[in-house]
Image (cartoon, rainbow, N blue to C red; front, top):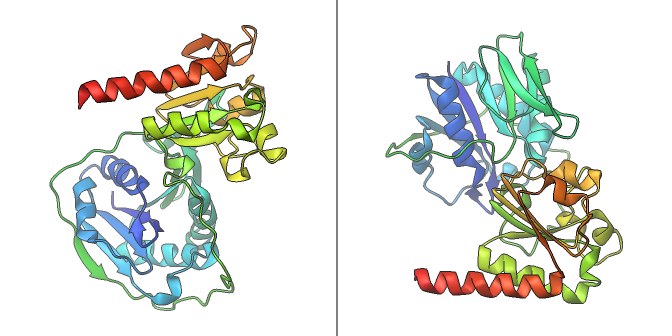
Length: 318
């Protein structure tokens, strides 16, 4: 099987999830060719994508692609699939992937698997449903597959390969109808969907002036920060930090929740985390039922002690 992987760019560099997508594609290809597609100006050495399984890289360096447009990029992905004679297209199941995958699938008349978390068995893909409480199997009946992989589903595997980079010019570069007037970037260096560790706070922190406790712990862990919906709704934290059913769905290796009761809407966005640690003074908080580790205690006492313990551990390891 020949597989095409869409490698999204952030500030002119491949996103962290490119490694996971290419690893997944290599396992799916099972000896076939894995091609990475990069759209827009890039400042990185794209041949290094071979370290994660790409055999070749198609790079369209057109300045018109500096700004993301789901419709334009989706059309280009469909053309690239036909150009490479690929059997499958792999994208990340994130904001950009959710925008381009349906467009490419419609253009290719291909079956779309939205949000798989594992490799297929034959043409059956595992997809979580009912907010992660059930596992469905999606069968793809078309000759070409479009697959959106849920972030942090499989570990990236590094090798010593080097990819061949080719400049690619589409037959017809679509003219974007989107005009970017301004760009406002999140202060965090770690996008939530890509974060391996997340420290999150809820109304139990009593006010935005206490968020330094969350940020200090996140800094020591190299983690992203998040919050519950009520916290973002009342303006304590920006909406892009809201995780849950109506916010961002995440799958980090470690999720620490302080002062969050654990309503079902919040759990729907975080219950795929590999390890969940809950800190709450209410021993009856629903979140404890979903936690791998629970600390019954005041967050204002527990968080500083946890931060100091991590600092001490890091100092001993240095």
